[in-house]
Amino acid sequence: MKLTGLYTFLERNPRLSILILPLCINFVKKEGHFLETFLVILLVFLLDFLFQKINNGLKFIFYFLIFITIYTLEFYYDTQFILHDNTRVVYFLIGFSLFFFPVIGIFFYFKRYNVLNSFLLIFSITILATFSYFDSENKSKEILKELKYSSSQKNYFVEKDTTPLILIILDELISYDELYRITKDSTLSYKFSDKLSQLGYIPNNRILTESQRSIYSMSSLFNFNLHENSKGLDSLEKLNGVENLNQLKFQQLIKESLLINKLNSKNIKSISYGLTEFGDNNQFSNIWKMHKNDSFSFHYTTMMLLSKTLFSKWFFGMVPRDFKINKFRSDVFNKLLSENFKPNTFYYYHFLAPHEPFTWANEYTKVYTSEDPEKYFQDYLNYLNFIEIKIYEVVKDNKFKNCRIIISGDHGLRNSKGNANYTSAFFYGFDNANIEKVQDLGYLINESY
Image 1 (tube, rainbow, N blue to C red):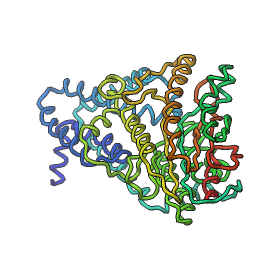
Image 2 (image 1 turned 45 degrees about the horizontal axis):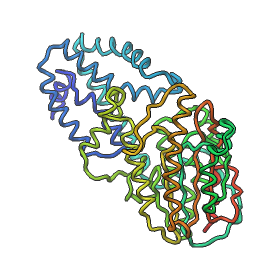
Image 3 (image 1 turned 135 degrees about the vertical axis):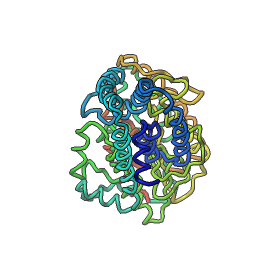
């Protein structure tokens, strides 16, 4: 297309296909599914021809409604803890609409569609420009350097052998000592801990975590406690939020971590059924997968795209917010059930539970979270009981008897009744478990081989 033709294309009408382009590019960047997303854009491009036939007033109404529907949540989460602190989405939607209604209205009133379309195209190109940032394995070294990381060693003097080592993370697992402090009910508080103890686990019902956020907690664990050995992480934590670029950086620190590199140097195989893959191990659909190779699914991709928009708030039955999380939980659980554990292999499982959303496929009907701390806490306890039973019924199987196992939270309960700085951990197959911090588990895993 000649430049004059492109200018005419941009000038004549507001383009819905260009309007959704930043959302789609950002989605492909985070989730993959390029071909399916391209088909979505193509379908919307065809709708543009129908869109051109309606009058300017209706065009504005449709364009504005589509804009706030697909971008309100994107702006909400990008500005959280920067421009607002957990504002209710409905209030943010009102402010967002009041701001952009006159802005978009001016473009339509003066028919300056070329400016509107050009801005969205340029914005899309800037998103595309960051696509290759994490292509190189050396990026982890650059990120550690940026964080001013300096290595240190902690010795736990564990016996080295070839038996499989399994790390099972229960996201937002409460400290059972904290649970007892709240409830004063020892039977309720320690039933899971007591059952694991009967299987031979060493319990730690109050272990410190350096972070209340999974992305920081786990990247620190896999890099020998970044919180203690770097100077840049604490300042990021104090922002009390995770920007998209920081999210990608810390995902990379899990994917190409110091711990996994150490294990590789000892010819220990590492397999991740957790947040992201290890290296180029792309056989599992990790929740934060960085190299995307999932099979073609137009329905799944469309549902995931819609879940990034206000449709996830308006039509819970059609596009539940936990659509992807539910699938991931089931996949991880099925892998734990079916895996044939092999010597000289480290396995990482990450259950996004008992973290909300409080649901588990068809087994646990979704309980919508309440802003009332008391109600939320009770919903959490009910779901926690469900998760404890599921995990216990698996790990009591005989196939785990010849393994070393660590079951731990990444952080504690983030609720006013709980203390997110403490969680619980359990150790099977270890002579001692004098671990004081979740982020020191990497040392223990490394010294086990």
